[in-house]
Each structure stands twice: as C-alpha cells, then as structure tokens.
Image 1 (cartoon, rainbow, N blue to C red):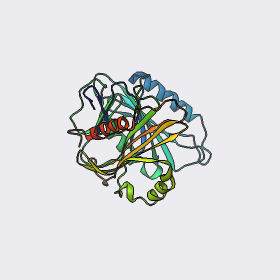
Image 2 (image 1 turned 90 degrees about the horizontal axis):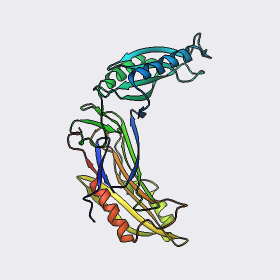
Image 3 (image 1 turned 90 degrees about the vertical axis):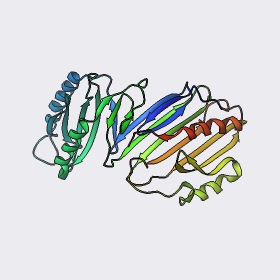
Image 4 (image 1 turned 60 degrees about the vertical axis):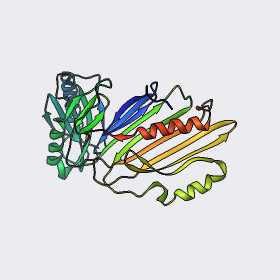
Length: 301
C-alpha cells in the first residue's frame, strides 16, 4: 500500500510510521518514572510551585520520625529545581524527589519527573537527577528527527549514550481512516533477556483456547529492519462485526540501549461500530506497513 504520505514518529530511540491522520498519545518513562512536559510552567513558575510544595511538606508532621514530611531542596542546571520529601507519612525508607527539569536551550521548557529514592541512596539519587537535568533539550514534532544519541519524547529530547538505563516509550494511536481500530507501539528497556513470544509458557494454551473462534491471517517469524520478531494476526466475527487482534513482539536483548523489547499491537475496540478495515487484506496491508516501518533511529545509541 502507498505510505508516502504517512508521518514518522519518534518514540524513545525508535521510529514508527503511521497514517497521516493518526491521533497519538505518548507515555515517556526513564528509570520506571514518568516524564512529562509541563506546558503550563516556565522556570519562574516552576520555582514558585517548588516553594509552595516546600511549605506544604514542612507543614505535615511525619508519623514515624521527629520532624515533617520535608527532607531537602536543591537547584538543577538551567534554572530547574527539586523538592524532596517522604513518599508517605508512615514510611521513613522511601522519599520522592519531585524534579523540575529545564531544557538546556533558549526555549526553557519545564519537564516534571517524580523519582522515588530509598533512604540509603539519597546522595546517589541526587547525583542521578543532577546529571539527568543536563541532558534535556526542547523538541517539537515538526523538527527534523534527532540524529544524536538519546531519547525522544513529546516536547523534548534527553541526550544520552553509553551506559544503559531503563527507558520506556509507549505510543498509543488510532486513525479516523480506520474507525474502531486502535493500537500501540511500545519499547521496554528493562535489562533482562527474553525468550520469543511463541516460547512463552502459556502462549500455546491461550491460543488453543480460542483457536475455534478465530481465523489466523498471518503467523510466524519475521525480521523487522534487522530485529528478529514473531507475530500473530487473528480475526473473528462477533455479531456481524469483523474483529481484529494483531500482535508482534521483539524480545529484549538485555542491557542494550538498541535492544529493548518492542511490541506492536493493533486491535478492534469493543463497543464501536464498523469493521475498521474494508477487508482482511486491507487489515494485513496496514499492519505490515506499520510493522515494517519500525526501526532504530539513526544515531540513537
């Protein structure tokens, strides 16, 4: 099918192409912690928010120790800052570093990041966020794709290379061109090697349980821009509506920035009207086009 007008989206260190009318939502995480562009803040208003939180946590007594919920505050590169407090009033082991990172450029965007740090790791946690603060730069969807090592997310880019770190990027999407169909592309870098999808313990059991209700349109091993993958594309008919459930998985290769687990999932949304695709053939063509567009961004690692 013709994908010449499709848009390429940056998701972490990877790229995926979607139909031009695709509506997307992005979840960004570094070290299992959400990263959010706070469009409502400037560096100055972020500092004001930090001061309000300092006053708030200083006003709340801790239930286990002599003192309040407040622990510390410190500045970050570019005009950002951190307020550190106990994560829970009844816990003196885990703290939360609420970080306000500021992009290291003239756009001065603010990114919010609430990082859990254990009591024995306060110094290391502070070093982690101080170093991370120096990596952020503003980026817009219409900008050229980055060519430097690092992690792309909505509104920004974190320059990073060398040492592995846990990163997650989830790009959920739907396209009005295919009503009732939704999907997501996900990258999970969690540092442990995985087996293939078909080798998972309960895979064959789950497949056998629904085998009589589905038609398998495509199944087996495939290679996606150098990555060994497995896919299962199934369809069924429910109350006259054609339903689709397509999955592709590339297993995590361990602590490799270029080798996270990659998942592509496309499915029919329940409660919607219409088949989404005009035929099984069109469904497979759209699926193959999205799948084959997945690739490591040049220069990403």
